[in-house]
Every structure is written in structure tokens, then in C-alpha cells.
Image (cartoon, rainbow, N blue to C red; front, side, top):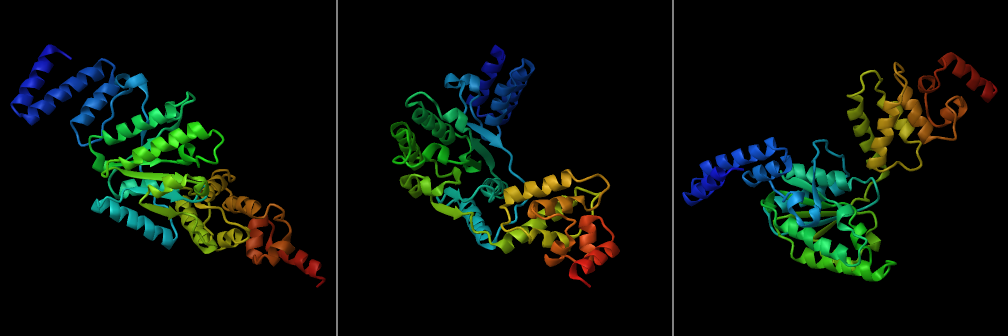
Length: 350
């Protein structure tokens, strides 16, 4: 940056010439970019735009940065009606800016808490930022509490707090019950610092925390949240319906496989417990991705092996008892229907 740039900035500021001021600032940013300091250039451009800006690490105390941008998602996650209605309520509260801005999503792993947070950021047209617990939690005595203070200073100093969602993913890393934790004093200090900062959070910032360990959370922390959403409310029928929606979307990306939703439903129904969406989606993805090229139904055989690990696809009698038709058994076993029918008659003594 040259002396001319500094003089021009001051002059344009005094003249209240906003357009010229932004143009000059953009030129300064391009200069830093050309000099190899892209981080500072991005920071300057964010300051003169509508985006939230954070001080580059090289300008902050000891170089630590506690928030990192996280992409929202355009892929909607199918949710049971009860949870979907609560999520709609969260979005309404955010959109109407009524001071309800702290939400706790609790439930089993894979139940959609983090994915829903990303959807909420997209729906409400806000930037999403993830708290980096690796940077916040420190082995030095008392430092974690200090870092929590600096984290919230970073949040409250956002240039556009009304455009931000801050995600504390698995907040239990910071706030397990102070009485039950082994390191009572240190975790007690960290949790106390978190409670204090939550009380002074800018109401324009939306804070979403997730946890798999709701029962172990400090009760004083739980009371700080305006609303608690339970993501453990999936029925078996909900999960079956979600599995079909997920598979249908994935099949659109795999052109060399066959779509047989009737057979898929029967396979999924063999599972004693259907996984929550996170694990379910991974199971479907891997079954498709690792299926044999050119084999239209191999992904269904792989799914059946996961649903019934103790049953062979050549056990025609068992497959028949599970409700599969001759044609479906033929698809799974890759054995002609005539052979299957003959062997079933022999088993029955016909």
C-alpha cells in the first residue's frame, strides 16, 4: 500500500464519498493480493461488502482463529413431520428476528442435526460458521476459558451479525456436566465461561449447538437455549420412507443400475433396526459405489447382505419365507426362476 492510497482513503472518508472510498479500498486489496497476501486482501474486500469479516490470523493475538466458514447445503434432508415442523419454527423465529436465537439440537449420531443446521443457514440466507474446538480447547490450565471469551468476542464483533449462523457441533466437547466430569476444576471453568458468554451473545447472531450426549450436558447450559429440538423422533416407517427418498436421489447419479423400489423396500424391511439418516445414506452410497460395473442389481445384493448378514442369497427357502417372489429371488441369487422353483418344491417335498 502506497502513501497515495492512505491519503485518498482519508480524503474520501472526510468527503463522505462512499463510492470512491470503496474503489480505493479495492485497489489496496488488489495490491495485497498481488504481493501474495491473499488473506488480508480477502479481509479488506469483506469489510467493504455485505459479508462477515474476520481479522486475518496474522493480525490476531497468537494467530488463533476460532471460526471457519462452512458451506450450507442445497440437498434437503427428509425429516419426520414432527421434526420438520420444529425446524420450520426455528426458521420463522430467525426470519422474524424476535430474539429467539439460541437452539440446541439433540439426538443420536446420524439423525440429521448438522445437516439440518446447514439447511437452516441456506433457508434463512445466512452465512454458516463452524466453531473449531481444536483451537478453543487448550491443555494449559485456564486457557480454554480464555479462548471461549475470545471466541465470543470474534462472534460478537461480526460486521453483519444478522447474516450469521454459528454452529457449535457436538458442544459436549466443551460443556459436559461439571460435577460428573473427571477434570472438575478445568471443565468447570470452561463451562462457566461458556455460560457467561452465552448470556451476552448478540441477539442478531443465530447460534445452533448439537449434541449426542444431552443427558450429560450441564443443566445450567441447557437452560441458556431458547429451544431444544429432539432429533430422535424417527419411527421405523419414517426411516423406510427416508431410505426410499435417498435411494431415488442417488439412482439419478448412477445410470448403469436398475431401479426396483419394490425389491428395495422388501430388503430394508428385513433389517431389525433401520439406521438413522447419516449411516443410512452412507450405506446406500457405498452399496451403489462398490457394485459391479454392468450388473444392474448388484447394489441390491450388497444391501441384502447388510440387512441379513447370516442369510445366504442362495438360501431360496429362507428368501421365500421373507416374502420375496420367485422373480425377486432370481434377481438376488442370479439363478433362473425354473431352478429356484424346482429346488423349493424339493425342499417342500412336493
